[in-house]
Amino acid sequence: MVVCCGQQSNQDSILNEYGLPYAPYSFDPQKYEVQQFQVPPVVDGKLQKDEWKGISWSTYFVSEVNGKSEDGRFATRFKMGVAEDTVYVLVRLNDDQVWANHANYYSSYFQDNSITLYIDWDNDEYDYFTIKVNAMGLVSTGYGNVLHKKKYYPAQDLGVHCGVFIDGTLNDPSDKDQYWQVEMAIPINIQFNDTVLLQPNHCWKLNLARSQWQYSLVNGMYKKVLNAEDGRKYPGECWVWNNTWGNPISKVELWGEVFGSDPELISNEEWSIKRRIKWELRNVFYAQQLHYQKYGKYANKIGRLKDVGLDLSALHYKPDIQSNNNQFVAIIKDKKYSISWSVDELGRVDDGIQQ
Image 1 (tube, helix red, strand yellow):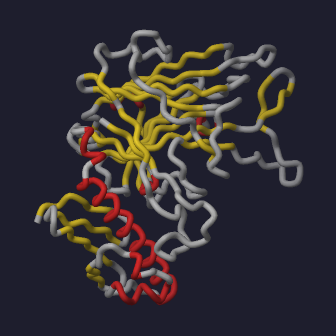
Image 2 (cartoon, helix red, strand yellow):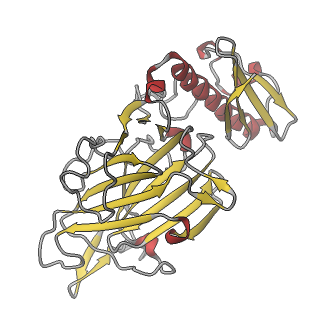
């Protein structure tokens, strides 16, 4: 099993490789191999010597603002492995003051420092589920999509288990802490309603994000810093594993990829073609959004997207567009592998359809 993430090749460009004002310039995945455990780890947040032996750390998370790696005070990285019917994730978050205020699922737990795992289980770049954990061990699971429609579920109802370990003390400003660590166990066949997620022979996409709030100490308690001008809390800082180049975390197309079957797929020609096709379809989607904003309808021919900046000469394929003004489907067919790929007006990618 292998995890890949996007990498921008030209962060200084105003327009991307297809002439559109969307970052990143291009999509060039990195790779992270997720290996099999000999013995499943105990989910307690601790990094036991033998449990995670041979499982590599990911790269350090990068700033959501400037894309720079954070490998110091707030350094964050993860390990990921599989045993039998469960995916395990271990995340280490450096922090010299570990604190959290919410231990109740129905409280404003989302305002605590936290780590969130995002997984798009069927690689359609549209809907996904999340697991959010704070330093008190409060776990929230959710199901959402790029239209920002979300539902939340208690973790225990889905069979998700998490453990937290703190190298230091929780909510004690009198000393310096080192880090806190989260360990997750996620059933491969986890279900939301009647939808089976994380099917082992599918390609998944994922990202992880760390949220950190500015604070001050008031009577020995941690309080979020307020803006003196408007009295509002300053927004939290955020680091992500897979750089989103200033885009919100909901841009699923910029997440990493997890291959749940044959790890050699990530290096063969078919997967290279797959990434190129999906990236071209994604830019057709971007161009269609610009066309709709300008003309109140979607283009019915690829050539008409040139009017909103799409560089047709940069396309490796010629997408076929089917449109009825308010809806569209763009399709790319690869003759060599006899596979068709499509994207619709919602931004949902349908891939791997045999012809």
